[in-house]
Image 1 (cartoon, helix red, strand yellow):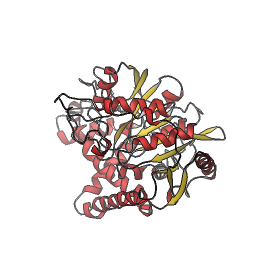
Image 2 (spheres, helix red, strand yellow; image 1 turned 180 degrees about the horizontal axis):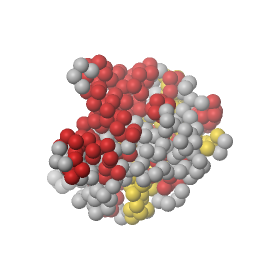
Image 3 (cartoon, helix red, strand yellow; image 1 turned 120 degrees about the vertical axis):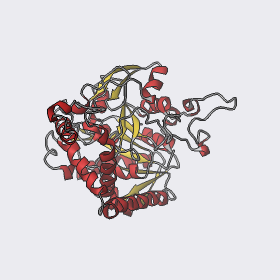
Image 4 (cartoon, one colour; image 1 turned 90 degrees about the vertical axis):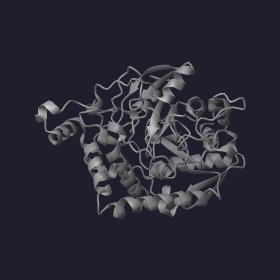
Length: 424
């Protein structure tokens, strides 16, 4: 199988630019864990894919190397930030691809390009070798042209990694609950041997209760809502039961997400200063370190990255930390509680992946707020660290519409099964 890899995932001796002029010449000396696992499984990596700079964007238009077009309609955006990966799979340039999902960056382009994208539970897949944007939110996830293909790639990359202490499995599922797990003989055991996500793509939703959060459906455009309702009806015909559930906290999810994500980004991107990474600014600044740092970051970062770093620094600054960052964390805890409550009434939740059809290229560049609000259905999942999948549910005016399924923590099999029923 051929696999394309998002350009914020480290590949030994192959440039990893994160879509930024800051890292235009950066060549990692090592592979990310997910890349190692791909190669061990016999995959062929066909190339690195374009992305919004440092993962900051939802259209793959903020890359320093130019925008990516949507194979479904070249005048439309492919979504982002993993738009290059989704487009590569949709165009047949790769069988599978890897992306990263911080607030929807796998599911958004999967929906806009008409492919399948999985955002795993936080900790299911190692982030070692992923250039960090927002550590507490992001996960590496697979793209495929079918649910089974994407799930098979998840089988390959999932599992604990001693180099990423956040990786873990749910012991209730009969797999690992800590990094560095070993088998009964004390040998290191790759948990892909214990996972069968691809086998879950059997389309059997008989008796499954699907919760529909009214707050994440009512805001969708009419064209998107029509496709979503048809897909729900088809699932009901296959034996699933649909019930309404409520997630009141998601009203505040976008605001909380961007405060947390930008705050973490302002810390993570501090390393790009022209000393360890980035162009050499010392000569241009005449040896003044402050001027050197400023010159490098002015030259190396694009406008959206600068905006998010500035806002994140502001949110963490003295006098505003409690007002913004602490309140955002409180809202995040509220979102988690609402999801937990919803899963007492439903096995999985279903929403439109994106509330709108793919915008035309250039439409959102001058209106960052509208771009942020497009993430309304995806960011709550990252705040709650839950698994989700986007599957093509149909088309409107020839443009793909994605359907999102969300499951409880480590409930990947449930969302994969539900998504495969939509395909069927």
